[in-house]
Image 1 (cartoon, rainbow, N blue to C red):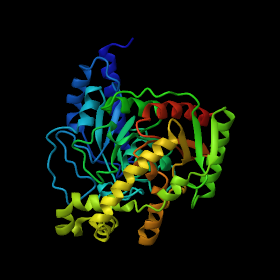
Image 2: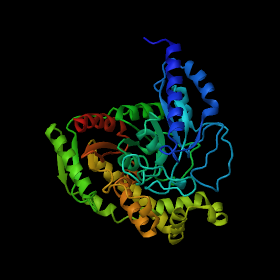
Image 3: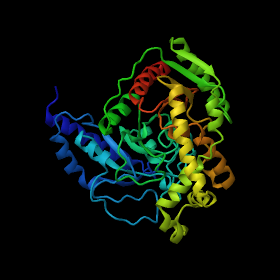
Image 4: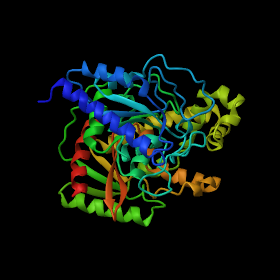
Length: 425
């Protein structure tokens, strides 16, 4: 068994290797971090040495620039938020410290987390390390790339419509969106109060599970595990699908079927109704309300791709918004009753990541953003849990997504771990 000293030395060496890796290849690591937490690494290491049995001891954690980290600025990918130093950690970040995780730095992101592509005109866009010159996926773009380039073990992000699963699919890693209230959002900047969840990404399910168990504020859910079905909806998730994604998904599906898991392909009428819902109203209304002063007085500082989305709130009446919220409550109940203890299986994203250059065209950007978010937003709207698993075919990753009902997080991670093993064979 390793001594405390050797564990500490190993972590110091690990951090130094990461810093050297970043310094020696600045082009590859450009735009991934908005700031590193170097000035308090020694203090962090001292505190980690005092942790006896932390779940995250020895692990490096990167943090999306929406979370308050004591002593550092939280900018949310913006130019308009005042550069105030956080006086305390976000609640979920404090739990990471207590579990022995070393916080590496704030990662870059889409401004205010308002896009599924990961582009940021203020601080640059991290390059996708798998698909050359392509978007990394958003909004937790820098976080995903920090995992893909192996400078962090776990990255903490938010997921409002797919922001930990889209970048996971686009960069060949694992992304997990828990049930919304399972992790505290205290001292985390808001995009949509209705749909925001704290999520995380890592190389595999086991690391996502460790991070989740560390940050969760609810007890483990022991739901019955018998007769689980994997359901593929015939009427949702496959619109506008690229050939490469279809081939990859079908290949993954065959592996799962051969394993003996019960897969059913059926029409789900509830999803036909869901497709007609103006989901964009949640983020448009709630984001404009959250940043109302900046929207009115500092709009010139906001990314045009973000401000155009905030503009759409002006099209929504108060009655429409209230009815939207009421309808969601009803559909969550209906969807949970339908899905029960089972899981949906879908492509995480139906397209391969578009080129950054092509996204300079506004119409193309809007189209790709809409398609990227289409499958993943379902779990946010239904207040479910969702896991994107990487499946490599022809040397390129495809995201395979499992969706579970509200509070079925533990069982999702369990079956996700089994399917992860099947897909790696």
